[in-house]
Length: 117
Image 1 (cartoon, rainbow, N blue to C red):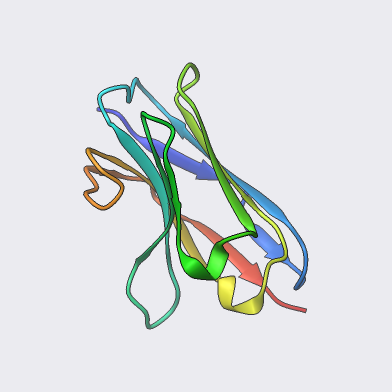
Image 2: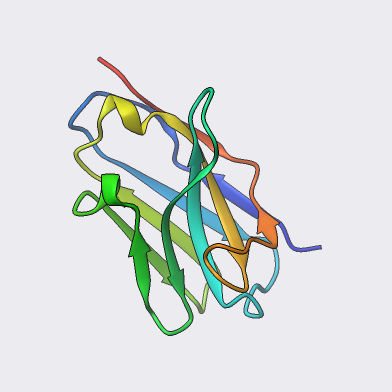
């Protein structure tokens, strides 16, 4: 069974950067879309950024201009470059794959990102 494994989370000061990575244990070519979601304490899980096989990307308004999503189809990996991090970016970040960015068939286990001074 294919699994998604995230890495790269941690503690960073406001204004800092982190790069999240997601690796698949098997081929995920059948999934048209991959995305990053996040869930902060007491809040619902929300879409942060997504990309599909055509190369289209989508970003949630709060992260536009600060985060960049990229997918390596040959290596079955997904990355999220996060710059100018703010305390309200603190959350568990999940890698996701599915037929669309909003329809998820496979989740990773999540990685904690904490933005604090």
